[in-house]
Length: 81
Image (cartoon, rainbow, N blue to C red; front, side, top):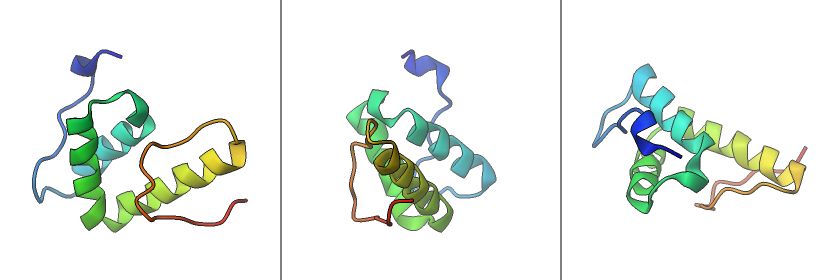
């Protein structure tokens, strides 16, 4: 993956629709980003209920599909389908 194709991640306490859209984009390709980028994603998720909900949904889909997983477990879990 070309990391230059991704928008820059929000740093610090930046929130709002644009920041969340960027973080959710990174969630979709999380297995392919650098550890530093993943850390910024999860720093945002810790403080953002909307992005935590998106992570929960992605993890639920991953569990239900059986073949795809998110690298970070972070304690956010929900039941499968």
